[in-house]
Image 1 (cartoon, rainbow over the protein chains, first blue to last red):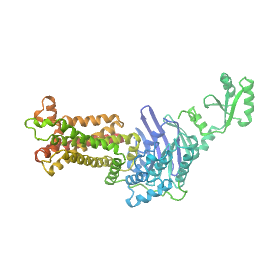
Image 2: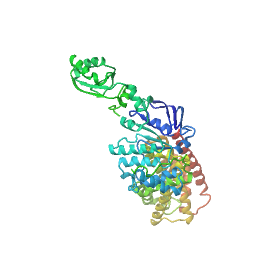
Image 3: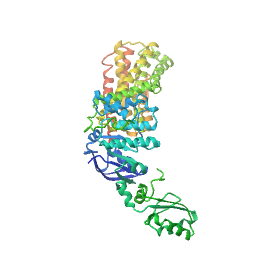
Length: 308
Length: 271
């Protein structure tokens, strides 16, 4: 097992209790809004914070008592790509290689390989302060790979990146995984978790509230969600009508949602019923179950538009 | 990124981890590069003691008229003070750098690396020593150009270097200890005030025998008085063992205490 987590930590007002197992070669996403405890969990697993109770092992080593063994086995790219802007990309890779004990004769070759891999060869001797956000993330990823780790932690790897840089980084994560790297990533992006993860663990207020493959999680939700907009003074009437067709679901503000057990075939019945009740529909859309539905069902609110 | 398959990641069982020496050197080199790449951060630290030596010796030139004053050149009295003070602030500078690293997250990168924790404090210290030697050299050269004389011969440089490097080491330990505990710029004022007061409350401005009241009492027991005596003796007369041992003991004791303070702060950060 690459990771076994059964830990708790009280940090200020945040109380984390996480239980999670990750098998070798898996990509697991911790999905949740800001403040859910994703980064804190990663900081515990990467030896930056000590759990107050429980036990976590990474690559077979206890994070509390065998911290140095854990550090030798993992690569970490934290949320803010903390990189010294006065250093060049190559100098940072050289320093990272020294810190991980890479043989002096191999430092240059290894650095060149990684720079090429992340597409930064041309910018290698430029100061990092001149890099774009995407370039900094790619360099951070290269730094985390300097010692060929078996387990890679990516803390919100694409937050703040433009769509193109995001897709490029996703491709690299997939490629690393194909090469056998176990990846634990945190994200607040549903699409990222859906695209990259073999398994998703939804974390909310420090607790893992759902866990499974994206397909299985969506299947648990079952019926598609019908999202309806009506005039503000008809909301209560519409809510009563919708409740007759299935379980009401959290939807973005200004809309109502219902898990439509009859699927697309009953949409016209819903519209007719709303019309008959004097709550004409302004807008409607029928969505197949998404991770956002899973999240909403598990937490009672939606991740999209959660202010994250 | 490169074409998939160009470079395949082959997993190592475990990285060997950095050694104390190699990692410390790597971290020190990073600190020294900052001098070249961000001279605006280092330049004031170098100019301040030079300005202090020249300004104090000019403003207080009449201090040499005090009966029994140990030198007839005010710059010989104030140059070692400026050099020791400047060295101390070179040491404190590492605390500022560490706070920036803590706030930016770069220090997390260092903490997550499989290196002995000692390297995280020795590395910055090596950079401090180089910065301090630059400060000492600059202050001494300018001081000599302004009339300072090495009455103790070349040994004067050695004892001044010992006092300067010692004070820088103490300042570095003190500032790192504060940086690890506060983890933000709240520590900055304490770093500077602590060191400034420690050096100021000595015989920095006037000899002990002309000081009175609580200032005299504090200066007499302040270990930095001994460190200043160590640095000054080669500018006031000959270098002797009597003038040296008190300063060396003070450096040894204060260094041990300051670095214990730093190490426990780092452990607290890891806890």
